[in-house]
Image (cartoon, rainbow, N blue to C red):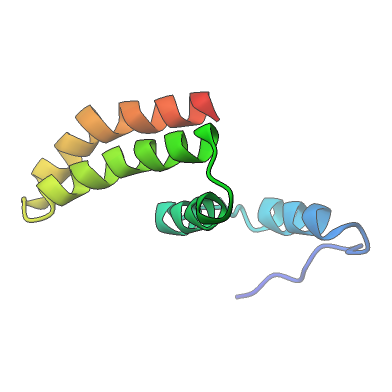
Length: 95
């Protein structure tokens, strides 16, 4: 069953998305690979201390994933909780 979209939808696009996300209880999930690509694109054109730090932090997360890739799901989850979560919290705090 689909729900009708809430009215009115004449606000800005951002506000419209907020209305839709609230109405349908949507949680936005961002992909780290896409975030990394956007930062990398900026870094290639104009490297800064900020883009370098961001890429290094994301690289540390990728290194964890590389090491645990062939591990069973439960071990990957445990490793992510122990190692990746603190790095993500640090990244968000840094941002």
